[in-house]
Image (tube, rainbow, N blue to C red; front, side, top):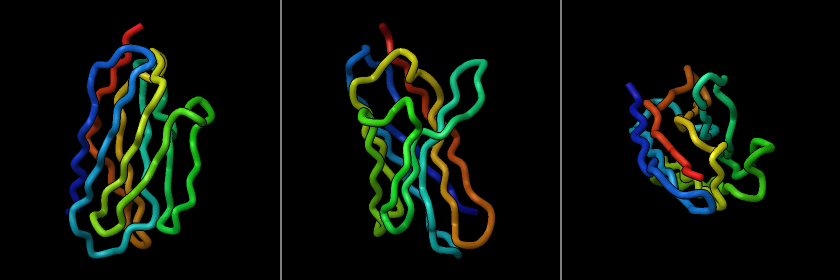
Length: 116
């Protein structure tokens, strides 16, 4: 079973920065897309950013211009650089990995809290 190890969540003041990392263990199937979703209390999980194996990216509207997603294919690792953080960025951030075959994997989540 593939495991995703997330790190980087923390408490930060508004305007600050954080960098999230997610490393995927070895899998039978190659990885297609990797991404981050977040869920705030009382809200649905939403896309933050996603990057394909070819390097194409897409972002949620609320984070465009502030967050940058990248990946290291050799390490099966995806990163999320978050700058100019706002209190509304607070939530649990989940790593998501989509394979060319089989079911996607989800991380257990890492808490990001932005204080005003």
